[in-house]
Amino acid sequence: MSRTMSVLGFSPNSRIDKTLLDKFLRLPVPENKWQATYIWIDGTGEYVRAKDRTLTSVPKSLKDYPIWNYDGSSTYQSEGANSDIYLHPVAVYNDPFRPGKQSSLVLCETYKYNKEPTESNKRRVCAEAMERAAEHKPWFGIEQEYTLLDMDNRPFGWPTNGFPGPQGPYYCGVGADRVYAREIVEAHYRACLYAGIDIAGTNAEVMPAQWEFQVGPGEGMKCADDLWVARYILHRIAEEYGIVVTLDPKPIPGNWNGSGAHCNFSTLAMREDNGIIEIEKAIDKLSKQHVRHIQAYDPKGGQDNVRRLTGHHETSSIHDFSAGVANRGASIRIPRSVAEEKKGYLEDRRPSSNCDPYSVCNALVRTCILDE
Ligand code: ADP
Ligand code: MN
Ligand code: MN
Ligand code: MN
Image (cartoon, rainbow, N blue to C red):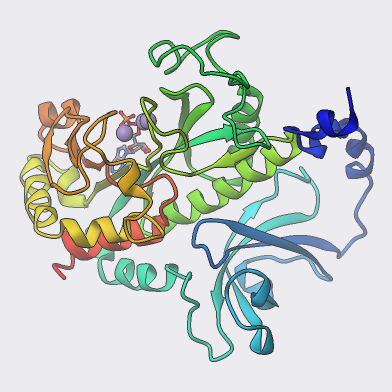
């Protein structure tokens, strides 16, 4: 095989022996030294970036992580002449990539030179909404669907010429001919638990090489913060295997399911007896704000999600609002168990897999609780 042939389609990472790293990760870290990985959302509003620094004292809480900066002209976030963007730490997680060592993951918000949030910092307005809605104790649980790709953009494990057999056997499937790269899913699940993320579960999805994990339920900002860090961990683990994670909502056109980020939402009143009345009130409010929500549910104001929300493949049409019990073809689904118990939560099925969960949670709270 020629050199080009062997490289085509494979990440160079997949050829590196990862077990060697272990002997270096076992080296003791000097006392009072701490490695911090700062993570942020770049100008696409969809991808994460990260860089590392050594702290010279052991951080005890969030405030011990200093504000830092980076070159925003290299992340689609500013002009070269005025390029510094500030990183404000907002949440700290255990670092699954240096287990048991003096290190942590630090989720950050981004701010411009004039101290204003960057355009891709959707967290600021979301946090403000959560503060105002705090007494209603809003909970969120997000189902993150995603697809694994090889380096030439083909779903991982798909034949190079042609397609796998039609959808049917793959969802929650078991077996070498049904699911691909479970290693990544298993590694990610454990890494998220170690990090302190409220990961709720995981399953193989309808299209081969498509998977899902769920985060939540988390109150206020917790679910969206967790989801961003869980995405970082997923990209980072897949990188080690030489596999690419795409959050594109419709990676393969045609008769293949797309990827969503269903957002399950409840308030204290919805979770109490006869909360179904509150759930129905929220659905009524949502029905009047469909366009606003579609705009908030992908990074391009609906331009990505329009490929997915066709009214087929377990989706509703992007143009219409609908709701129903156990209906996976509706914008909003009331789970069967919620209808039976007359309390619980609703599922908003519209958010795209590449949504910013801060924008989704923000829109839900402003429509359903703050009546904006
Ligand atoms: P589906 O049947 O749509 O595939 P999943 O089991 O994948 O549902 O996901 C359900 C999600 O709902 C989980 O993330 C869970 O944490 C979340 N959830 C459960 N109860 C609530 C609640 N009361 N409020 C908000 N989210 C909830
Ligand atoms: Mn699910
Ligand atoms: Mn799913
Ligand atoms: Mn769902």
